[in-house]
Length: 291
Image (cartoon, rainbow, N blue to C red; front, side, top):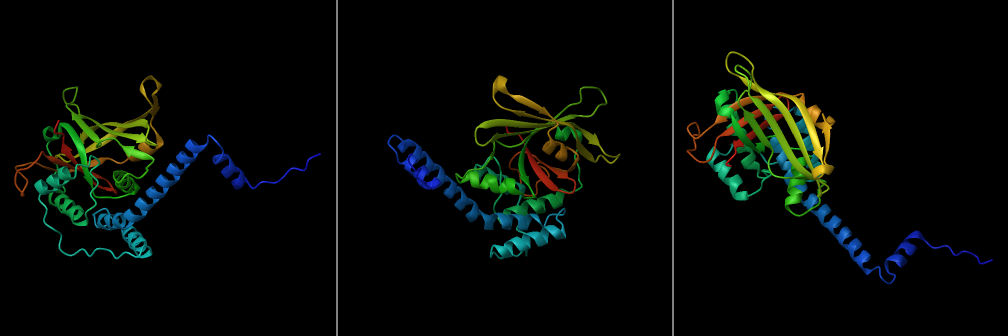
């Protein structure tokens, strides 16, 4: 009988791709490879900026010596010198809010080193001041956090058109509502919305309450329950207490301080800002919703 002829797998794949009628597939393959190469290039170019952001974040009160050394090691391996922290630049709350609004980025990823230190300085000014419960009622939107991880890098790459498996849909929203029962605690919900692989809608909810920690009026957000929703419409699936959200739920968020126009040394300009500290992690800023 006939002797089978060996053909290298790559040669066979190329022959199939070049066969009549395969031009659309070949074009699609070229587009995918090109986009992957572009995305890789974007991530590589962003790495020095990302590492400097982590270097700034390591200066926060919750930063550890291990974190500092890890960032310095990563900077050395990348051939990048850490920006020297000398005098912390003066940023008023109004200027920080105006800068963020001018950028037009709903994820509010702060890439500028001095701007990050400006937020650090603001947090130090209001740390431990707390806030009255009535001042906290309403809808708040995430605006800044003083710690940095791969989520920031992904958001930065996405802004430049690169691929990222998780795409945020607007800012994280915090809602604090009046207690339903007399003498009860105000309820709280936190909502993150994003797209998985660019197409699948997802939502994670944290539910809890605003608690008074002591007689001095110090307060914390205590999260009691979490859930995740994946999918579209009636095809949506709900997952109770997803593992990733449950891990974050264990940490109460302490109300560090509240800055409004009257207390803003930089002058009036913009809605109030609330600082919340995730114990052992870092501090987040939420701005009262403009809607």
